[in-house]
Amino acid sequence: MSCCILETGRLILRPPELSDLPNMVPLVGDFEVSKNLGRVAHPYTEAHAREFYARAQTQRASGTDFNFAIQRKDDSAYLGGCGLHLKEGVFELGYWLGKSHWGMGYATEAAKKLAGFAFHDLKATRLLAAWFHDNPASGRVLAKLGFEHQGSEPRDCLARGHQVYCHAVVLHREKFGRVAA
Image (cartoon, rainbow, N blue to C red; front, side, top):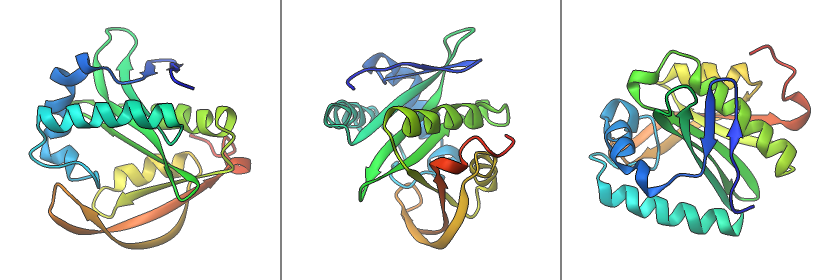
């Protein structure tokens, strides 16, 4: 599955491209965004983005990671990114949006489509996700999809330079789509 494009009512989820760099770097480089992601450095540079894209291509080809750029349909604006990352035999779902795109339902819309891709196309039986304690909006997005709490512990946050209390959640295939979003 080298390339695939997913669509929702308002969004296109597509494999990232090098041409996304000028839009991606300032959005994910905003500390208000990067502090909510475990593996994103701050400051975030074009070199970091180039490493990400090279890694994303290799991992997609091997079937271990499926990263997507989130693009708005009506004006093709780059909004952020999302992906599935194989971790100990189970896919972990993650997403981020540029701060100017928060609070508009884009995260829920993209995450729901991504979960559907994982369950239907990749035949996953469950998905993992996590959110830092001081980012409850992300917790609400995951709860809307039916993710359930499975534990909490400190996790590394590269942008903050220390561990942050984090809530781990799980979604089983049979529960997906049975919760009102």
